[in-house]
Image: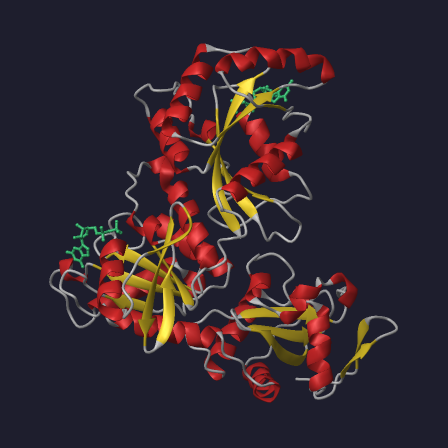
Length: 512
Ligand code: GDP
Ligand code: GDP
């Protein structure tokens, strides 16, 4: 769970970006590789544990500086404007001071400003590379603070103590560990650019669909979740305060919105992306959609303000949808809904779509039906020869190991050599044949030749296959021990678990 936003602020050259890199790029290379986040060097994730169950987002406001425009607090320029917004959004601010330069006028100004905003500030004295530099710290008490944190970003001195301190502060704000969905039911995130109509949709959904009407404050200052009931089932729209938040958008801030959406997406079971019919799908929307896809969360696109499209014909919606799908090539299965909040058209359909997505993302199929489908798929379209091996990929056996997302493991001869296009074909056909609807499937190909994880290596709680395990997109989410249980229950594929070698023994029967 990524909770909390931490902003690094300070004059130029104090070491903000060095600190940012230190915190985001090291510690077992816990670097975020989610699309939409890392492409910018402004944002990164700092994980607090190896399981990546907890972490926070870090923003380097120094990254807003562009050639010729440098950070000058309170001056009329974009750099300051962006810094100001990042600071206001932040839960904790790191004010970085330069231990070599001593206190400067801007440090005073910034400190006063942050205090006035009521921000939780950690005063960091950087460039304290060794014990001999410690006397330099005293100077900074002039800022009227009680605690100064000496660090050396360049050498990593004190940086992990700093991370612990940040974690304590976030915990103090109830940001960490407590965001775990206080309400029962399917969690829905509403995302999209400002003005797309998210608040209008939210109001319609809450006003018309829910039977219990009350905004319930979540566990954090700015996280408010709204429960609603639909078809006798509970749903929660997460972070509705975020939906209503008004942020003026300047170019550099696109990612800040993506980042804020990211937190809601992490918590969601179903994501609704609202777009303005007149604007079509923007690059930012596409980035958010990528992000959702990387987490295998079910997504629906709501094209709002359909009333504004003039001279509609019978094909308008179809053509519009085709255009969206062109931009989102990897998401051909995503449902697209055309609504108008203003005229209250088709808004009522949204919850039906959510219901269907939620249902299909928890669907389980039996091993028999799954392997039947696998056989059919391979029969219909044989995979290409793997040149390096002089053989074709062979698929021995498939089993569904968990839901949310439905995750299917396909045992094969050489997993790493299967072509991406063939994987996509298999995924789409599995979805069709097994009627998984519009929910994303997660298919894991496990090759005979590749190293397999031993059961002892899998964290025990992962065995249950809960959704918690599925939140980190690049973590190996399906422990071998889960297969073992599965296989013991229905040993159809001729794959035996060998206790002695802690490996699967392969005796492929009925190879397809
Ligand atoms: P920013 O403008 O605040 O992002 O600052 P940078 O991270 O670009 O750092 C400015 C300069 O300070 C660079 O030359 C860094 O190598 C140097 N620097 C950063 N951190 C440290 C540190 O902990 N010790 C020392 N001696 N130099 C540092
Ligand atoms: P948000 O920033 O995404 O929450 O967007 P809002 O819900 O605040 O809507 C932004 C603006 O679009 C408001 O002025 C709404 O009245 C308007 N709006 C919302 N839905 C529709 C719609 O279906 N049609 C038209 N024409 N305008 C809409």
